[in-house]
Structure formats: structure tokens, C-alpha cells
Image 1 (cartoon, rainbow, N blue to C red):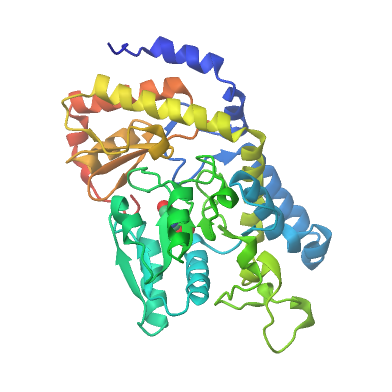
Image 2: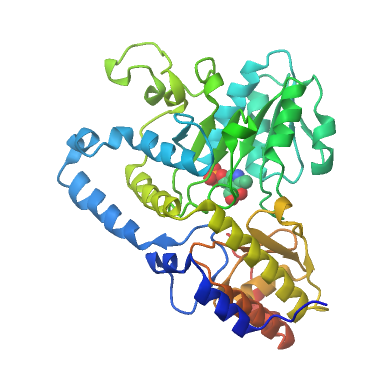
Length: 414
Ligand SMILES: Cc1ncc(COP(=O)(O)O)c(C=O)c1O
């Protein structure tokens, strides 16, 4: 027999929540229920103070001296090392740079170079499009001898053969939350002589990660989602130590040079992870990212995961309890060890329903063609909010509020 969930029971869970105090460290508008931290994390209150300092003091007063005086030149390494602790990397394996897409291009090209004679980049059709697009662009640039082969998630492991140079996967799928077993897929790839490039956009700060223990070769990830680094925050990348001094990064900018301020006429790669850098980083964004990462490091990843699993289970149970028979289907895996920190629903009218929810102050997002996506960020999301979000969904369905023409207008960003 399943026990009926009540709002009162969730209020009690909030009272007992050991992570509860973190919420006060974020700016969250009153009355808003934010279930989209998997797309853009909330703003840590400390970020405004930090950015103000960078702008008013380090830039305005310090000017060019701040590269040394405020350690701007080491910031990519420093924040990278902190992210490394969140993703189970060994020291010196992680650095902050560029965007996720650009890092993917860099890591994919570097991996292909380590596997000459192998033609295939293996991925899945439902991977995040930028990953597939970057692979296509790289293949075209390399003259077309390589091929992007797409296999369904359950068939990935059996599709890894001696032709595969690189297995390129997003660890937690953006549209369904489905999660791969990183260690298992990596082990299978290595057994066939292939390398792995993992996209951690929906994993870093969302689920416990053990990149070094899993034997991962390369990885990339976003700063603006679960790391709460701010809109357009720089991304990060990971290169296993064993590859670092042999890997050739295709974008050979001066920040990746062995001695940038020697201004030599020819490129010489830096040793270690620094060779994955390209050019001058966006310092203001970089500073805001550090605030988000620091906040995440204060919490225990296992406590975050435990709460995230509970929140996902409660949300799914509430969907079944409160909006059964209204056309929703849960498309995320139900087993916690196969799911990231989101629960997604399909519905034939997903777009206007999500717009109607947003108008009521419950923010999730829509992913074409028919998915309503709800992300759980246990650092600042309470249990009672889950009840209120599903109650709002029930209300807009029962009242037909979602049918109002205003909710059907398409927007550029979904
Ligand atoms: C899996 C995945 N990879 C990459 C990106 C985005 O990459 P970029 O930051 O380069 O736009 C996203 C954005 O949502 C994503 O979900």
C-alpha cells in the first residue's frame, strides 16, 4: 500500500532538512518555485559582492596590475581545482576555460589524435545537440575520414569495437535525466582500445562523480547550471593525468603556451592541464563562478544527493497522486541510480502547460518536442515547494488555465 503524501509531511521534512540553511545564501524571489537550476542556477548572494569588488576595485582601481595583484592569472587553475574536488578528479586534472561546446571540440580532437587509424566517434542520437554538432564540425575539418556513429543508450556498450576511437556521451541526459554508469562504459571502451569524453553538464554538482576512479579520459561541463556560476559562466574540462603530456589540443592559443609571457613566435604546449587553455578568460564571470563553486563545496555531495533522490521520488509520487489521468507520463528512469537530479514528464501540450506554470511562479522548462523538465537543486529547493509546484500543475490542468492563448505563443528560448 502506498502512503498518501501530504503537504504537512513535506513541511516536516523541510524542518528536519540539514541543508536548509543554504537557501538563505541565494537570491530567490519570494513566492517563486525554481525547478530550473539544471538550466541556470540561482544567484548566490555573495556573487554580487564579489563581482562588485572585481569591477569597482580590481578593474577600476587595480587595472592591469590586478592580473598579478589579485591573482587573475591563476583563477582558471584555482577554480578548476575546486571543481576537481566536486567531480572526483585527482589534483591538476581539471581547469576552467571557454564554453562547454568549445571544450568538447578541444577534448574530442585531442582524443582522436591519440587514436590514429580509428575512424568512429560513438555517441547516442538523444545526446545534447551541441555535442553532436561539434563532432560533425570536427569530422568535416579533419577531411571526412572519421564518422559519427549513433547508438541507442542500451546498445552503446555493444557498439564499441576496434573502429571506435572515442565514446562521447553526456553522463546525465538533458531531456530525460537518464544516467550512464560511467565506470562501466569507460571500462568497456578501454577494453576495446577506445577513449571516453564525458559531458558532465547535468552531473557536476548534481550527482556524486568519481572521474579518476572511473578511469575517465576526458570530460567537459557547464559552470552555469548546478554550480551556480551565473549566466554564461565559463565551463570546465578534465584531462586524466596520464594523457596530459601527450595530448595535442587543437586550439593552440597563448594561454596554453609553456611560457605565454616569453612571446615566442612558435607554439610550445604547457605541461599539464594548462595546455588545454586558449585565450584570456572572462574575469568577471570567472569570479562569480568561484562563489558558486565555493558554496557547493561547503555542502556534502552525499547529503545533496540523498536529498535530490528523495525530492525526485516525492515529485514523481506527487505527479502520480495529484495529476493522474491528465495526460502526463514520467519519462525519467524511476531507479535513482539511473537518474540525475531531474524528473521529466511528457505531455502532448507540454509547451503551453509549462508557460502556464511559469506564469503561476513555478519555473521549469520545455524541451522539444513534448517534455516538461523539472530539475532539483537540493542546495536551495525545499520539499514543500514540490507539493506547491504539483498543486499549481493540477490547478492549471483542472481549470484549463493552460489553454489561454497567451500561453501558446512561442518564445525564442524554451
Ligand atoms: C549536455 C549539455 N552540453 C552542453 C550544453 C551547452 O553548452 P554551451 O555552454 O557551450 O552552450 C548544454 C546546455 O544545456 C547541455 O545540456
